[in-house]
Image 1 (cartoon, one colour):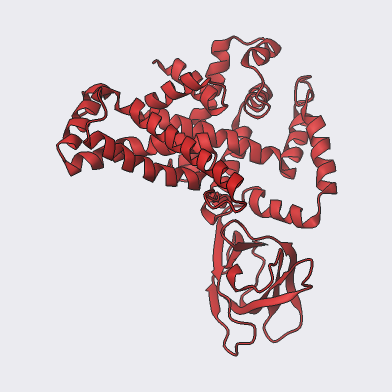
Image 2: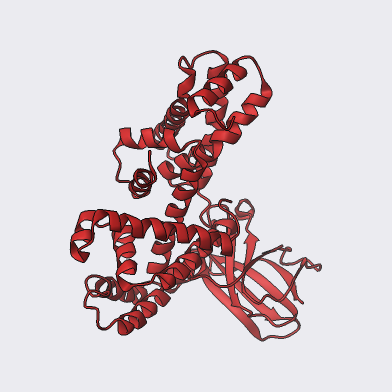
Length: 224
Length: 193
């Protein structure tokens, strides 16, 4: 198989345009072919990356500015993008806040550097609070918390995260209607350089249609 | 092994595995596991399930190869692909059966899309794509990539719209993919997780 044939097969495979026999034959071909596998991986990432970028608000603005720059080109983005941009904008307005937040967590455009900090939970009534130390990040910070749902006497569907500066009543951050992922992990996006150095108290709450808001645990976050 | 053909390497590996050569089993896994994982992930769309299936597939392959079930040793790649496909099929059937007979689906493997490493992988993909799109020299090349990959339009339609030959079209795609690979290495530093 020459380079051009391989390239064409890679695109057709990644976009699922092969029939079953051809796909099986191609799989046997690339199974031990390191170069082909690297090309396949690049093609898969390119495809998925474009899908991620397409759904982002920033992509729309890039397209608009590019469109202006290429105003002499009658082809540029005129055929279909305005239609999906409009649909995307309308959907963004219609989506519930909680869903939007989930999208921000999972599909937000890339930032230079992402820190994921795992928080521990102490029992709400415990006098001792588990402490997590994190460095102030120049990039985006996401905190994760494992929620042991087996400890819940009533199933909870929505979760909240409250962050306060220690010994103050001022809430730095409050999130509601968060969902657990399939591994019972709660992810909270703190954004870019959100937290100044200092000690913070956090609290996790849970709620459902029958439970208004239940405290699930707490802890201390030290930002250095 | 460098100058041997795939068929010769496969024959040698199978013969050695049949002779209980443990090093051959390791070589076999090293040679084919990345491809098998890619294939299972592509077919299932689920990284966690693909990893589970990969383990089970290797167990079956070694069992069968040791027992001499693979008649044509040179067809090892095809045999691995077929075994992996069968495992995936059995998993789906089992999952469906469980769902029908017992409301609780215990066979389904949850995907890992929300795991931090997956979140970062998606961040990197979007970041590198944005760099690539900004680098593409002409609006035409950008639109071509978008229409082919995103809207999955037919290649011939795109070529006709732009007045391009298929060869030229393939060159644009090939260059974009090569550049994506380079940017990925620059920005992320490795090919695979």
